[in-house]
Image (cartoon, rainbow, N blue to C red; front, side, top):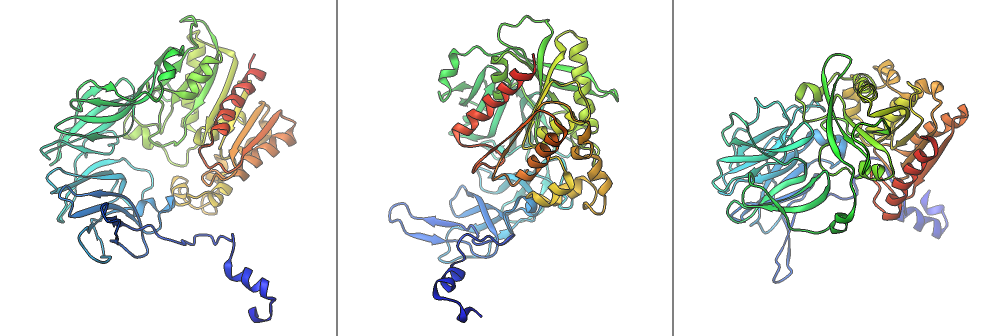
Length: 502
C-alpha cells in the first residue's frame, strides 16, 4: 500500500511528524557519567526503565537512583531504589532494593546505609509515609517511624550515621524530627513557626542549609549551625518584599459537625481591626492528601489581603499535620466530610464576628478548584467563586487525567464498577442548583485536570444563565509557569471578586 502513494506522502508517513501514540515511551532516561576534565561520556544504565534523582555514594564508587518502569505518575507505586556501580565501562544491570519511596534517597556519611521516605503497600494509593533505612550492600529494610502518627519527609543523616532528621508537619507549622537509625521513638525539636521547601542539605560538620519562609517572610535560603539551631537567611531573592505591608496571619480552630477539631489559617488585611466582621474569601487547598496551609508565606492569601479581603484557609479532612486518621479519611467521600469541615469553619468565623456572612467568596486550585465547584452546587451563601483546574465530572475525569489507578482506588472501583460513588461526588450531577457567579480557569496543556473539565463547568453555567467567564492559558500545565499568565491568574481572580463581593 505504501509503495502506491506519492513520494511526498510516503516521506510524511515515515517521519510521523507530530503524531503522539498514547502510552508510547519514545525514550527512556538513563544514567551517564561525564569526566569533567576530558568531557568523555560513559553510560551506566540501559533498558526499559526510567532513571531519576541520582545520588553518589560517599566513596564515589556507586550511584543510587530512583527507578521506575515508565516514569508516569500513574505508576508511582512501582517506584524503587536501585544502585549501580560507577566504575563499569559499559551499562550494567542495577541492583534494586525492593522499596517504594516518595522522593529522594539519602546515603549515610559512612556509605553503609540508605534512607528514604515512602510507603510499603504497592496496592494502596493513599497511605502514611514512613521513614525507612536499609543496608546499602543488601538486606532487609527497617521502618523507623512505625509508632509516629505523622508522615515523614525526605531524610538527612547526622555526621555519625546513627540518626536521621526530617521535617514533620505539626498542624500549621513545621518542626525538626529525629529518629535513631535502628528505629524507635521520634523526637521533635526546633519549631520553625513557618514552612520549608525540600529537604535540608548537610554541609561541613553539622551545618545545614534549607529553604524556609514565615508568614511575613517569603522563601529564602537559610543556614544554621545545626538542624536544631536557629537559622538565618543568606539569599535575598525576595528582598523587595521587605517594603510590603503584609496581612496579619494566625491559626483558628473549630469543631466540625462530628465533633473533630479542625484548624485553619486566617489572614486579615493590613491595618484591619482585630475583631471586625470583614468580607472574606475561603481559599481551599489542592492535593488533597497530606496537603495543608501553614504559617509559612501564603502568596495568594497575602495578595488578596492586599486587595482588602480577609482570607480563610481551612485544613479540612485529608490535610496533613493532624495525624494519620485525619489525613487518610473515608474513601469515596469527595465533597463529604471535607466540605462539612469547611462550612463549619465559615460558620464559626461568622459566629465569632470576624467574617461577614453576607460578603463571601470561594476559590481554589486543583482539589481546591473541585471543592469550589462543589460549593456552587451545594450552597448559595457565596457571592462569587473561582474554579481553577477543578474537576466537575469525575467519571470522565478518570479517563481524561494522567492518574487513573489512584482515582479508582479512592472511589473503591473503576467508574463502571462504583459509578454511583463517582456520580455522587461530581459537581456536574447537581450543577442545576448553581446560581453563583463563577470564573473558570485552566491550562490548555493540563494533563492532571484537562481542559474538558473546565469546559463542562463553563458550558453548564452558561446554559443555566449563571454569570460566568472561562479563561484558558495556552501552553500551560497544571501549574502556570509563564510570568504574564501567572500575573493574569492573580489579578483576574481578584477583579472577579471585586465585581461580585461588595
